[in-house]
Image (cartoon, rainbow, N blue to C red; front, side, top):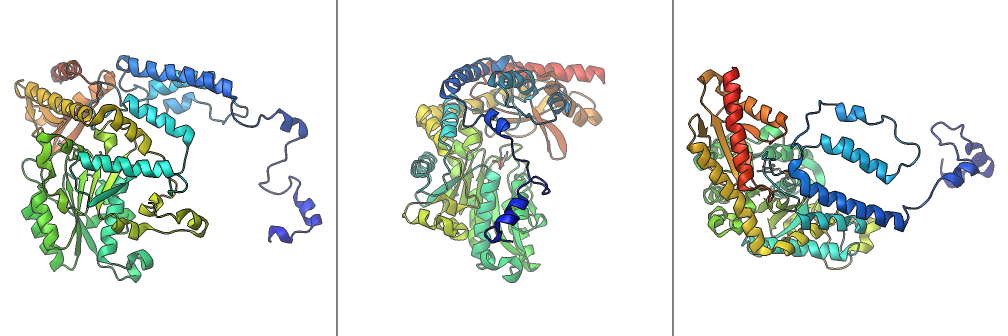
Length: 511
Ligand SMILES: Cc1ncc(COP(=O)(O)O)c(C=O)c1O
């Protein structure tokens, strides 16, 4: 029944709380006792001052904290009230619980001894930028709803493009993550290969079975994208790599030919600059040639390593980029912008817009200006003002400051690798390409090596003194450290290495 069609009698009959699911109306007394509006300006100001000290203290003392908690799964949840609060609680009480329960339950990714995954930092300018974006709380879906957020996004994307020496053929869009970036890139590839999929769907458009190729070292976001796009994760065959974990172009060529023969339709290749385990760099010029010959989309996953193109000594990693259709770079990994901030560049960005533009009636009036409306470049309508934090980081450090700061983790990785090389009982498991070192303890019986390497990582992480990760290379378990946090100094690297050596001999004695 339409609401307007109800007569007064019906309406009054429906008002009492006897209707299932209807919330009982508050009494006059209850209503008077419920505060409305926000926290008072004076109180908020005081809380902000307190929070400023909290954040500064956290940053200053982060190195004294355990890197990771020793809590058992579920312990944090068990310490928190199961029922939501009926009455509002004081800021001081909430902050005290953050100190008492939340902070000790965190893995402190910003800790200088956190060497897991890829090292990164929420730098001070990034934190400040993130803080400022919260009270602004804009929705950067169209230019009209957020002129400054839109134009600043365009600006920081272009600044980064210039720093990466990419030509103006490339323009981009900011997403939360590289996984979302690759999904959008492959959606464009799919649409260009089967032009009516957007409108009619894969089946009605009689789309072929597409294949997307990525090396066996590439990130699993390739499969996630295939899942989301209805292409199927099995249609992401993994291409073998060489002894240095780089995609083998000859194997790629063979796989494409075989797939064509088997009636598959090769759609795209994902080449990685800085693979997840070893930071290896795929041979993009050869791969791009294969893509050109086969009319395939070339996506470069530079989520971690792409930003190193800012350094003159890494110019070589950019070979072939100009031939790419899309490139993803994660400033939240390598360029000191707090999570999340990922840029997808597309050669001729209009290709992306064509696939995703869709203006609902209620937004039509908001899209009349010629300016970019970033909602047209992806599935998200509501968009955060992410550009502000990147702008603050980029301005605060400048190109030279950024370059110096991304060069240091590479120096630390090479130093660490030298220590591994000269220590008996240890060996490097992969070449050091960027800020990542993969290595193994081998000073024990062959049969125990894999287990022991895993246990070293587990014991160190449980100690709270450092945090490493493990991975598998050529079927063997290896340890892995990732530098990239601006707070990690040579002394921290040294301390981590001493801890690894001590833990290895301790565990070896126990076995
Ligand atoms: C090479 C590479 N690509 C993509 C990703 C996914 O990044 P995101 O978390 O931004 O989706 C990762 C994550 O570590 C990665 O290492």
